[in-house]
Amino acid sequence: MRNIALACLPLLCVAAVAQDDPLTMAEVAARMQPYAGVSVPGVDPRTLIGKVMCGYQGWFTAPEDGSQRGWTHYGRRGRFEPGYCSIDLWPDVSELDDDEKFATAFRHADGAVASVFSSFCRKTMLRHFRWMKEYGIDGAFVQRFAVETYHSLNLNHCNTVLAHCREGANLQGRAYAVMYDLSGLRAGQMSHVMDDWKSLVDRMRIGRDDQDSAYLRHGGKPVIAVWGVGFNDGRSYTLAECEAFIRFLKHDRRYGGCTVMLGVPTGWRTLDRDSLADSRLHEVILQADIVSPWTIGRYASLPSIARHAEERWKRDLQWCRQHGKEYLPVVFPGFSWHNLRPDAPLDQIPRQQGRFLWSQYVQAKKAGATMIYQAMFDEMDEGTAIFKCTNSPPVGASPFLTYEGLPSDHYLWLTGMGGRLLRGEVEPSEPLPQRP
Image (cartoon, rainbow, N blue to C red; front, side):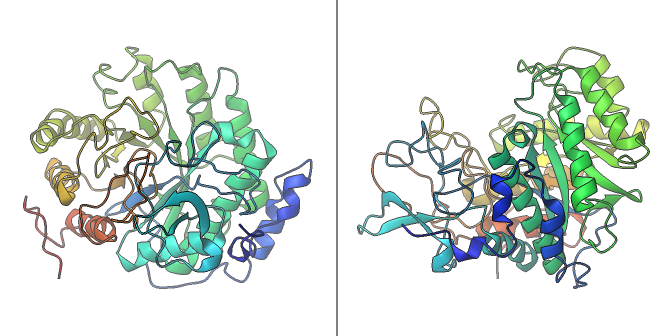
């Protein structure tokens, strides 16, 4: 191993880790000045219409990457070695420079050391946004887990990743927006999330900086997403707390004025399946502007996609039109989390060489969708990543999926094609499009 990778340093204020106030966003913003306001050909960040936006986790770290968090979202039980890992896909690092790669205890079939990347590295994050541009992907919702904003090390990581994504989006002409994930938040803690948003506005001018031309807007206002409202999986924060957060984001004199997108359960409209059976959920949703039901694992075959589109997407869209709301359906390439949860089967929802994902784009378009959320750009823990993953993962005690021999950029390309389908540039035909 080596010292902190140089690729991780340029934008990072490392001293922030040791300070009592880890939110040194003014210093981070100052280091971004050479890039602020850069105007490059790209997407129109003033609307979500016609866009495919990826979820971007940005939560992978490695020892000696400068984050001081060790192996995060790579290992299990504090270890990242054969038999102890949480990812089912292995990243393709063949394009990364040496200072972006972090050696692991895993070995390829030829005995070579297997390496991974860190989301803390500026150069790697900028590369990801360059991939988005190259394949025609419109941008990303940068995940900001509320529970990760309590501890100074985790908060510093969240802020660093957000700054890297902001820089990458501006340089590559992509759009980006903050998405708060409320998972793990306890009752009574919503005020902390509000305080975190205040800090981002005050210190980084998120959604307020005229030079930050990449920040996503819709309806003339900056978009802020809040994920995890109304699920019946035992979350302790309440619908009333969620509603208060939405009202704050929309109506606070200093920190409001936002277009609010809500990540809700598949059964939000009918109050069944994964949804709380509480009609107050509809009252909360009516306070927001965009409804985005989570669908990962809710269907697993091509026929079930068509049924879901008929029973859910079409009727959800009708409800949203009747109530003056936008609708952002979620699509995903497949699903697998065997290494994270060993009792679960490997390749639980097969990708079918892209047919599973393409069918969702086709059905969403037929249902009337005008915007789509692609889950996820870099999610290897649940096997939903669309970025470059290798067909030659390490061998040994931990099994890994591959892209079935397809090029490592296959799902980046297919997602770009999904955007063209959404915008009517290609016809919604069931067969997978042919790549030149």
